[in-house]
Length: 279
Image (cartoon, rainbow, N blue to C red; front, side, top):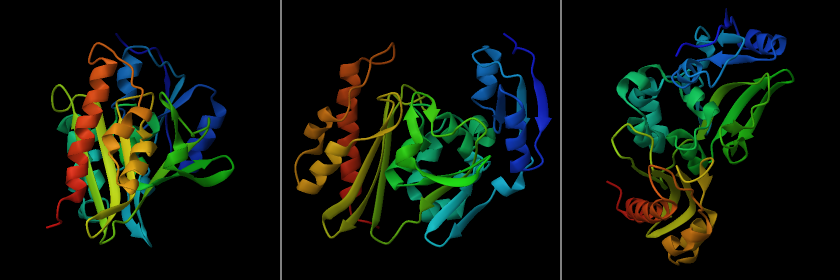
């Protein structure tokens, strides 16, 4: 199929993009376009205007600011994958990036686009939840910061309001005692995960503290398994506690029971990664 007719405008600044969004009731931001173009072609999305923000160099930066790693929304997956700053300060993101689709997609897709789209089987929303990240959002009233825990609302639904533009992803820089782990199961490498898990913790000797377990592919959005997190802190079996956190649906790819079982398998793997000695 071909997309429905639409207009095109190239934004000269974030403020210009916001102004254009305010002028058109049905407009969409074009960043990497790896999800948007597919929905346009299938006519699942039919905006009257596409607002191209690819020329905004201010959204392409990767830099450390105090205790935060700040990644511009237009940074491509491949750029982040090659970035020494991401590898050093956000190793969980570095672990997850090679699992995202295929090189051709990662060369064009943006971190901001993936997070704003909020696919329930996407890796990056779970990483942000596990790391306690934040999102900087620009809108008519100025800029605001939204915690990742408050950003993902439901199926393809976020805290972005009409007229908002996601500008920056903020991640706490890894500390000496930081530990992270990542695992996912997919039918083929590059496919959306049947189940995935991003985890972060602090380690003191053999003990783990501040454990954050963020699953994806098991619900309408990425979600933290808070009962399992608490079980780790109490020294009880987090896999047994996981049944109170997850209630996945079934589909043609995997049944609900299969997803629950696989979630437990991944949790065991991730816990082993978190507790293994650091080289």
